[in-house]
Length: 341
Image: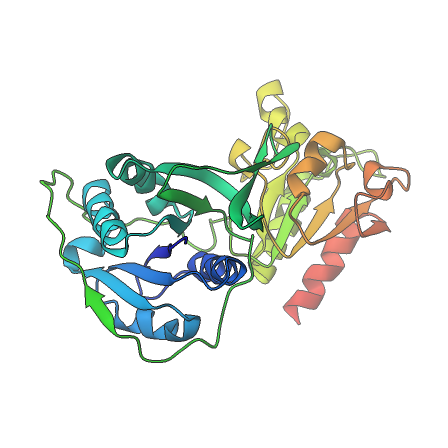
């Protein structure tokens, strides 16, 4: 029988991040689909009691912990040593892990240490004929594959947005501390430096993805471009809604062509075949035409809306749930007015 280990780390506040709660839901579903396979929760971080109690009702047979000040911060040597100890203690055959930046860096090395196998960017876990399979996308999210492995332990780094986050699982968990042979460390973590809320435009946890297309920089009805006004409208909306900002390839490429661009836009914001594939509950595209290479990046957006003056644009061809045939400048000005109220 398969034995499942859900592996997670705490955030700076000592709680489990949202992606961990999502992936825990996936681990619980997998255990149930395997006929009640034993589930173990393995946690690493500083003080883990509150985090363990928050998911005490998940049905796990045991809660394993590697705790201490040296495990509070992200560092490959200590993270890999802690994860290895938890995997060996649990004797798990399937290790289900949230694909945080911290674990994405450490888990492949852990799989090598325990002679296991690892798959990254997992977007689904299914049980076929009593055996687990994962879903994974390739070729810029244009092809999907289902994979099965015989090698164990099998590590699955699951992307955010795949499962719904679990809640109402609070209780009292009995933590079992696992000893770790501390490695020699040369990395000293001095602290973290993050962008201010005003400057940050990429927000993976945002409820809404706002995508700006090249139309924002083109000549408008009066025959003139209005780039300063466009920048102000977009920034005001981002501040008021706390949405995440995306961009079409045509817009970010303009900087390399010597054309005027939005000052806060970069290739990091690009969404689509040659950009990112974000996961948000809702998406709003403005001043872009819904071309297939761009729209493919919206594959995992659950509700898609667009604002465009062209009623025959790509968004109108079944690629958006709702298309508003209107001037994006006027629409966003009204939306910002409503947000201000």
